[in-house]
Length: 403
Length: 224
Image 1 (cartoon, each protein chain N blue to C red):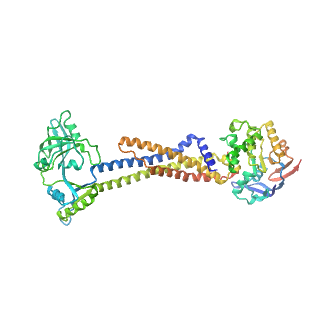
Image 2: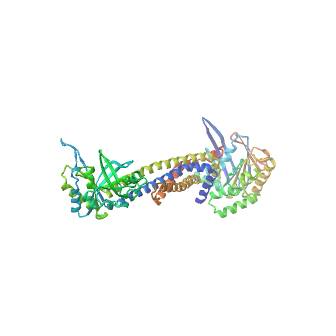
Image 3: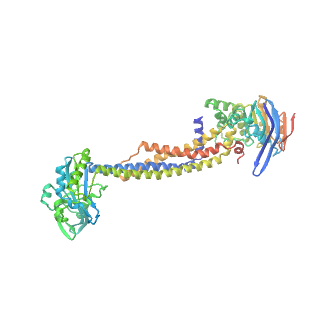
């Protein structure tokens, strides 16, 4: 009996192919949108997460904070405590910290003969390349010797090489760096590898010099912008974080503030942001599913009116109220389930192509597919009940005499 | 078999109340062939709908096969329409998207018959009404007379005790109409109780008993 009713429902849908397709369209688009949104969001999230993990989940960033000028005091930053000695102090006294690398950066004009380019110049330690897993593709990175002796060497990002040395070999040549109307000359000793543009900015348009050279020649200051500490392992990152906080609290007076966060915390923050975004998009896609449901209700109501006579005949031949109710609910369910399946297919296709363009992994979870499909069935059921109920309670005499 | 007493039916047509039946009483025995006659508006179709459980009377008593229909629930009425009554309409009322065979199967589907049994029964009935060669055709591919034969086969599907025919020859030419009436005659000879609604005297003449309605009341009830 159930099978028979289902067959009747499918047959009547096939009898009106174009209309069936049009009324399914809402569900198809809705389901496809949900699937695509979840898949694209998950894929790009996975990419961001892996980019951050690539940076090392055992990294801890320490930067100076700003204390407000309350009670007549002048607002000041704790930047004047961030000396190279502070970095050494943390490295030596925190058992879970493997090394601490200071960084400072400045924007200026890099000049090579007729070519110039606005670039960020970063002063740092030789270990910078190790903790960031970012190495030169050509030549070498500067060494501890260069840092200790404040040599005037520079390592360029790939974009800078393209701009400044369009058709000559950069290694061994000199470039000028112009900042605050003073000019410094550096010797190029290396070119960094090409790094995909990601969350942490465009590394390819940065240049690197020893931190001491940076402090002496560029910033003329005894302080650095921030420290990156590397924990012994990612499991020890939290312990290292506490140790650093403990040391800083003793080293830095109470009013002075600083910011400290681990990559793990950053990851958590980003994940929670993308999850919220994902939920919002699913909500929007869900609304289109709901609109699709209303489309089904509309078409079912038309169908009931149009087939009033058929309903009358079926009732005259012994169809019970429940038979008619079931038949029309089945039709709505068939509409939404076929629409749902097509939608899953199209959504998968769309998110696959977009993931190929965006360059992130194609992620499509069974759970999402299942939820989207169940929801489309539910929508069909919900919006199918009223038209089906209307059909079932038609009086046989009235239905038979309907023209 | 059929026993009605003081059946009345009032319609609410907008503001106006229409009294289609004003107290009709009669009995019909099993195996009878009865025609109900009357001009249009006399209430004969209303009476037919009530007898076939498609509609319920406003007041009065109706029993079919000793079952009190006036008290029956909607579900029971559906059961009676399926098992006890077979309908033949003037407009044939076949389902256009189904084959001839599937049309005859419909009442069997609602009575819950198994597929094999259903097809066998439908095929037997179509052979019986002379349409064994048209089973896979669709209603729009066959003639009016053939459509009415399909309708008769469908009416007989669950072997009902009562066959109701509402102007069964109304949409047919004279010759085809006579063929259909011969078929009803045969069915009656085989023991089916048949009630025929018509306004044509030569069609009514096939029945041995004629009930004439005028203005919602029985004018005459004669056995030929």
